[in-house]
Amino acid sequence: MGDRRVLVVAAPEFAAFGCDGVGSFASVQDAVDAVPLNNQVRTIIRIAPGVHRHRVHIPKTKSFITLCGSPIKDTVICWDSAATRIKHTQSSEVTGTGTFSDATVIVEGDDFIAEDVIFQNSAPQVSGKATAVCVTADRCAFYNCRFLGWQETLHLHSGKQFLKNCYIEGQYDFIFGDSTALLEHCHIHCKSTGYITAHGRKSSSESTGFVFFKCVITGNGEAAYMYLGRPWEAFGRVVFAETFMGHCINPAGWHNWDKPENEQTACFYEYRCSGPGSSMSERVAWCKELVGDEAIPFLMKTFIDPDLENPWLLHRLGTKHPISTVSL
Image (cartoon, rainbow, N blue to C red; front, side, top):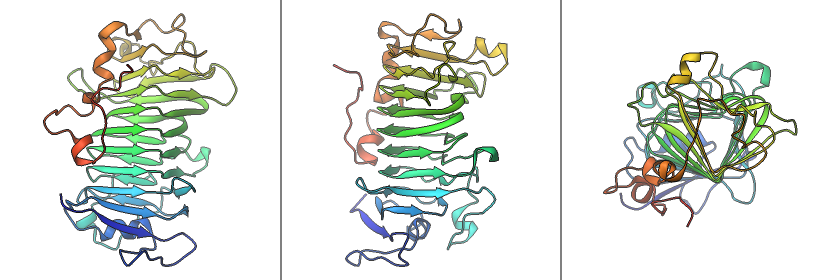
């Protein structure tokens, strides 16, 4: 793909910011708009610490973008209103219309990476949806990121995603969509009564699903108020493997979305989980505890990166990961 390109976004308190003449932009969206159409060069947008109060759209025409925040000080992209449209310096014919426009950040461009960025939708709880990030792109990775909101915080609508060392909080269906996603060593925080996941697999032939591997689930101090998930569509598929579950998890574990017929089709699995909320003794009869080799297909990187000849995690993102996440 050639050499990498670096763009720099100013700290919020400055109108302009420069870095050795490489590039300087007043907002994250300005930097995204400056990326060439049909981009094939990894473009790293370094965002200065602070709270950047505007919305961001990574259009389908702009792939290989990395949003890089600060590992030392908070770098926040924050918005609180679904009524305000994203402002672009380019025409709608170039950027597209944006998908699920209530999100603070919309990612449609493939091979996207975010590292050390806090994504926040600060809309009040009473306002309904408060999506921090919506992903419709294929091949996305998030490292050391935080996703803050109340309802529907992280919308993994489609494509394949890898999240590592991330923090995600919310209340209702706050990790949702019909993508194929592996979340490894992530912290899931349940703010109030609701459901962690709502997966949208529509048929048994779809290979999509959410896998949580070696994650931690915490709550607000109360007990038994949060479900692990419910099927947004009839064949929703979610796996929690080797995950610590706090007191907040409802002993039943899973909910059928008030549709008994979903119990025949939803695929909700648990494997070697621990903690006070992990007991299988009172789980709904239609979830399954995986044993032996049953969990292996979900714990391989090939779950999200099946092409061994051209793995996107290695080649496209330039990040080295082992093929298997299973502990030795």
